[in-house]
Length: 165
Image (cartoon, rainbow, N blue to C red; front, top):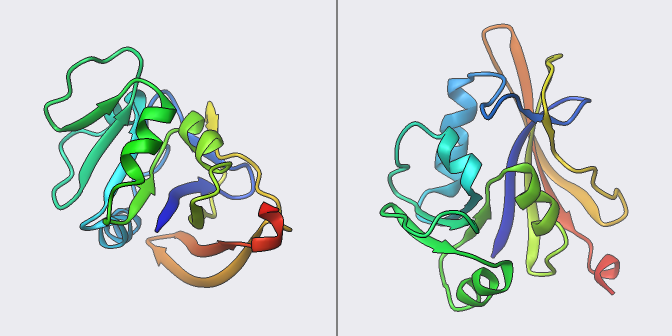
């Protein structure tokens, strides 16, 4: 199964500021790790560069026209090469950022799930999660959390079949 996994400020949809997450919420990072464990994380070069260390328990696949070597996983120069390679995988696939990867992945028919954590904070940023169609993406399950004085909700959305036709 192919999914998108992201965290965004509500309601602004901000996901990043100057190449970093605009928050540090340990519980949200732990939930991300648990969800993606054993899977393939697909991300862009800038998202990879924002991560301070390799992510154990997951394969990292990068989409980048600029990088030619990547010792921590696989690298693809074009979206079509990446999709072709993913089609032969049995592991779960998670598109994990950044903004351009999300905008592209949301249109891939094989992406059937969206795990979006809405963080209830006001923050400024320079990258946002794309708006999603309420007709195409329906909430299926949600959980509420808080850490310190920050509350957040992880919503699992399912793509509606009629929206793909």
